[in-house]
Length: 144
Image (cartoon, rainbow, N blue to C red; front, side, top):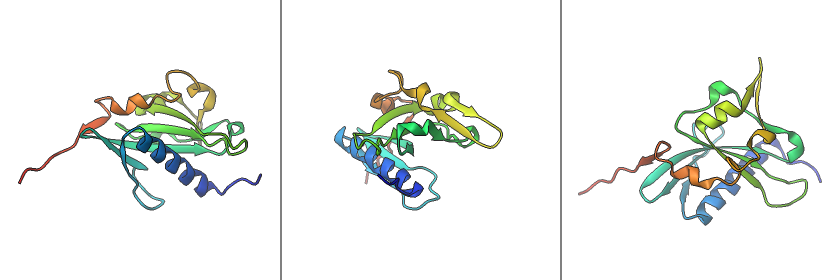
């Protein structure tokens, strides 16, 4: 099976994460473009969460490229293995920004989050992290 283009890998991951969030009762907003500050906004029960999605095509890719200095505070990072080589359902690894920073191996010119560091019960399918108060901001309501 031919690999999909890099940009499509990222978009595929974002759409899978959005679909999973919808399935779990969240409303999702997706900014448009390639130079977005945040990949997704998720809202549920008057809280809004900023979500960054990083995707790889297959487990053989080892991990997700990311530089430590690009990790945003107060953001949830969802690392997606699309499993496109086996055409099985994607795997989701959810990290706080602090966890993403800690799990990034930083080198001179690149950084990577190794899949072995997040493939555990602290990260895999931990959708509950989206509701942590430090990462969810209360939505402002206006009264007329």
